[in-house]
Length: 314
Image (cartoon, rainbow, N blue to C red; front, side):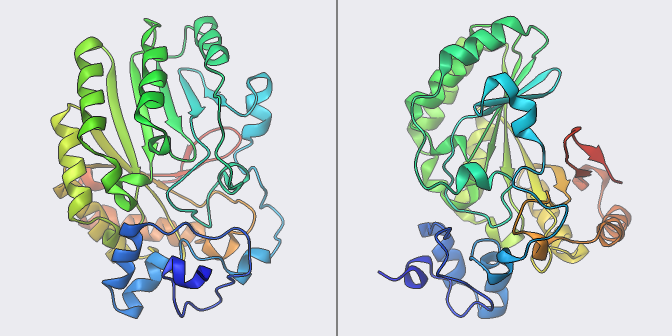
C-alpha cells in the first residue's frame, strides 16, 4: 500500500512522501479528514504530513530545543528533572501520530518501540529526591503502553509517600479514543480506591476544534467520572490555529466539555519546524483578543518553553 493512500492525506501542497519520517494513520484521523471538505481538512493534515519545508535548516532550531539531553544527565533518556518538585518520565517513545513539530522527534521518530523501561533506576531516583511531589508521564504518549505497564508506573510512584500527584500527557485521546476502554478506566478506578491521597490528571494535546469528536467527548466524560481532572495543552501553529477565532472555538469547546485550557505553547524550535512558527508579536495579539472576548476560565497560559523551563509570555 502506498504511503499517500495509507495516510489519507491526499492532494496536500508541499507534501513529501519520500521521507522515512511519515505520519502514522489512525482510524479516527482518517475519519476526521474524510469527513471534511478540502479547505477544512488542511489545518488538521498540515500537522502530520511530511513537508519539503522540513529540510530547511535555520539557526536557533535544534534536535533538542528544551535542552533535555543536558538536563537528564545521569538519568539517561528515561526521565528529566527540570523542575524541583516535578519529575518528567519519558514513559513511551511511541505516539498515535507523528506531529511534524514534535519537540521529541529524536525519540518519537525512531520507528522502533522502546522496551524494558528501567523501573529500578526510576525508583531509586524518587527515593533519593524527596522534593518530588508530582510525576508527569509523557513521551511519545504513555497511553501507547499496555494497561499493565501503565499500572506498573503508577504503583511504582505510589510506593513513595512524597508523591502526591500523577499527570499523563497524551495526544491519543482525540486521535485514538478507542484506546480508552473500560479496562483502562477500571485500572484508574482501582488505583484511586487503593491510593485516594494521590491526585491524577490528564493533559490532552489538542490544536484544533475539529479534532474533538463525539468519541473523544465520551472519554473526557469517563475520566471526569473517575475523579480525574482533564486539562489541555495547545501549540500555536502557523496556518493551523493562528487565529483568535479558531482558538476561541477550541477553548470554548474544551470548557463546555469540562476540560480546563491549560497551556498555549509558543512553538518549541525543533529542527524542521520553522514553517510552523508564529511570530511572538502575532501570538501576543491573538492572546489579547482572546482575553477580551472569552471568560477568564477559558484562557490558557501563553508560554515559551526552553532550557530554563517555561516562561509566561502574556
